[in-house]
Length: 476
Image 1 (cartoon, rainbow, N blue to C red):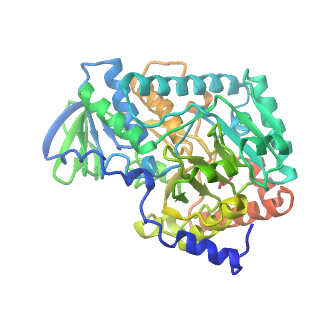
Image 2: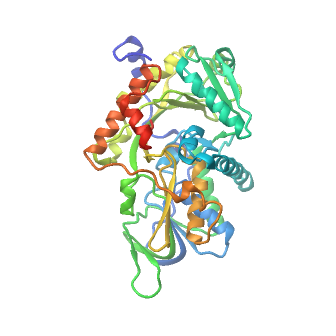
Image 3: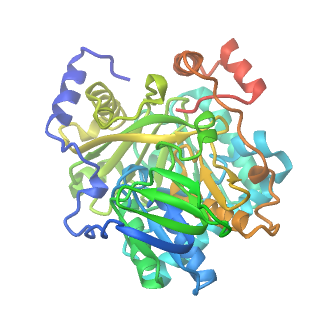
């Protein structure tokens, strides 16, 4: 990739200079107005905390399964404002952040998890169609590309796993992958043609919000929950305290991601990592012809520090990933959403990947936190004598997996064993992260080691091999 200080790097800085400092998905004039904030004291059978995908799906699934249930959703800011509206819009069937990660961590359970994940994606697609949600949902699959020879072995292994699970992967050589999408950096590729959709994530969230309201869910926005306490007396209810009111609920579903955990225990399992994204101006017909991309797949390269990219409905390229930035003490702040050095680096990598698009400019640039855990996929649990359940730790693949996570949360609250609650994935927790300053030192050493492995044909140093052995790692 292009080195800082070169002519190409100056060009990259110029290409991002005029970009709006706002997520492309949220920069739409027809976004729904916010629901009123909660004022006063209300009651509910189920209170859902968080207006991201996990919370929206939990509220909707709860009402669909039991229309008479009194369901309330409270969101601290606006529905979809955080990770739900800031991601790349890859709606994957994977529940385990890829097959190799699932095989390593859940072994013989992988065929079941693969089946459940593909069923989950089918059900998202069916809901979008049944509810008439206009979110540009396209079941185009995902194209994993290899940009170095050492990455091709991993692609062949993934193709074998997919085939063993009944999939129909298409393994491509350099010429074949460049027929799909033309970049001089590609040396091979793997197309999982059914395992991923692309979507406008904000419009999906707004559509789910509308479906919740239509089903009778009461939604309150600009309503942060400051604390969850046991309500005095024999009712056995939980109280959600907000700035101007409260919710007394029989059960609570918690889906707040990386933000200020209302359960102290989650602080040990979650790390907020910043991810950054660019979006180009719309490509002309000639520019599209220059790169191909007739099937419009979502794309990711196979390095440890990887890029992900896809076309939007109006033929822009969304380009993100590579840098994964952790701030000491798990700090989250709005000022960290913008990182000029990373934007320039991403733009430089973009033009190295697609030199035929030189002269293209970026219209949007943004960043935001991902709730990362040490096993790279969601974990679940209960608290308050089973009256509260949670899902967290999606590590960037929550657009699809959040619906599965929401159903797990509802099953846990139901207190009766189900196929989902019997899963090892649901019954176990990731290894917790150590406290500071060890946490920060370990993360930075891991980032350095991953970058070094990319420069040395994928060879993992002693630190990475040690993390592999104990099951504790850090994914870019």
